[in-house]
Image (tube, rainbow, N blue to C red; front, side, top):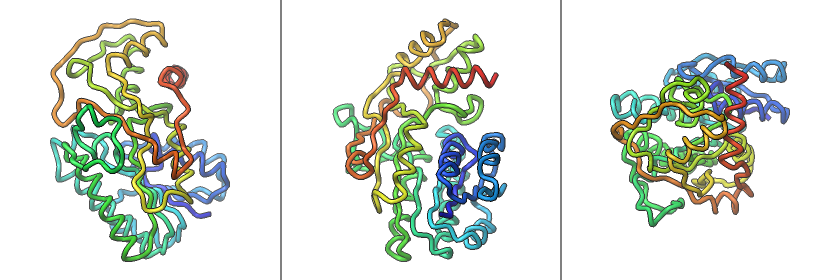
Amino acid sequence: MKILVTGGAGFIGSNLVDALILEGHHVRVIDSLFTGKLSNLDDARKQGLGRFEFYNLDITEDEVVDIIKDFQPEIIYHLAAQADVRVSVNDPLYDAKVNVLGSLNILKGAAEAKAKRIIYAASGGTIYGDVDASMLPVNESNPKLPVSPYGISKGVVLDYLRSFYLTYGIEYVALALANVYGPRQDPHGEAGVIAIFADQVLNSKQSVIYGDGEQTRDFVFVDDVIDAFVKAQDKGGNLLINIGTSVETSVNRLYKVMCEAANKKVNLVYKGARAGELLASSLDNTRALIQLSWRPWTSIDEGIAKTLEFMSKSK
């Protein structure tokens, strides 16, 4: 099957590309390499001889539509995004350009190529907004009240997906991802806190926690997330589906587990909370179990150990 992956040189995208290549698909990747790395695709190049293509291109460029139309993919995985909440707060116009206008480019290409399905990486950590603790883990029927421009831009695309389904018949699955972590996450880019802590702990650098550290997140391991993406090829049509563990983990506990796993203790300081960030987040994954037959299987302790092992070997 022909499959297009936007953002395929990124952390999640490259892991997805590897899985698709191993399944025997013909994969075309579009990535600007603004945050993605070409080295993340080394395995795909070696394994996918004759079945792998890469285009170094920003999704906001008009040429993207022609590349999609030329390829005629059956499935499009749309992962490319401006994914930093802080960047969205400081420059909401840029955030909207990439996440809204760039996504419309992908949708236009999908329509012209007559693609069957778009699988979209939504943001489960931001599209629901600051949910009252009594409502956690939040399910898909909860009101969408994003706080940050990033959450707004990611949420707007959900309406466009529905519009293009009604107009062009392109099915979609929007996977609302919790805080994904694991091998290949860059601690120096727009990384999540696990990659940042892992780098600091392994290199005995000072670690910083913003706020009091009692803010919580739903951390889900990348291998589990890739399994959900693959299952969404033929399940869960025209739905928003949470992909998370349904478990809250505080940043303080996360740091403690990280230090114990690495058998290290480094200097930790606390600084003021950052604008646009949520106090608590976790996603109810009941719909994922029903619609995708998916559930996470990697515990936070196991996932952190695998992440530390990968980063140690990459040093």
